[in-house]
Length: 196
Image 1 (spheres, helix red, strand yellow):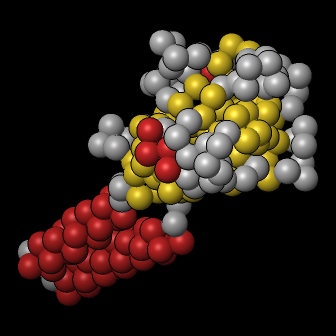
Image 2 (image 1 turned 135 degrees about the vertical axis):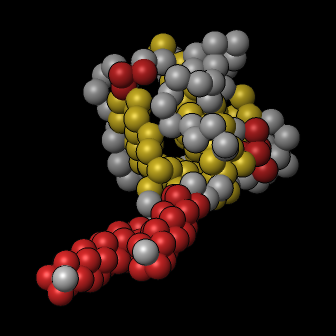
């Protein structure tokens, strides 16, 4: 009975640790969107996963590549990422964007970038093009220089949390521990039955 109780306690502890690691607030998200012309924007974004398990906010970095211009990787870690949000399922409102360079000029200057959004009250569209950016404003698009936006299609969008190596190791250790205790209990139980 003691062995059974001890194994159960350890199993619960390991499962709790695994769950906590998997639901850590800070996550890396892999995202992708396929445009109607067949080109794609895909990349990674770091942010804080909310308690609903779907919405990610407070990005610290976005890295992306547009297949229509593969030599132009997007990296955007500027001030305005604090207002961006991403939905893993794509069913909730989200809005985020990236640029080939940081908008760190005092006056608006053009940058090649992208925006993805399904916020119906804002734009409900995805687009890639040239945008005017500065420290104080970002305009989508840059009044005619950006490509026309197209309606957001959920079937063209995907996003998922990328497991951290430490979380994966902890998960593996947890499963190995549970298996070991389960096997040990069965082996001890079999020996007692044989002895009787």
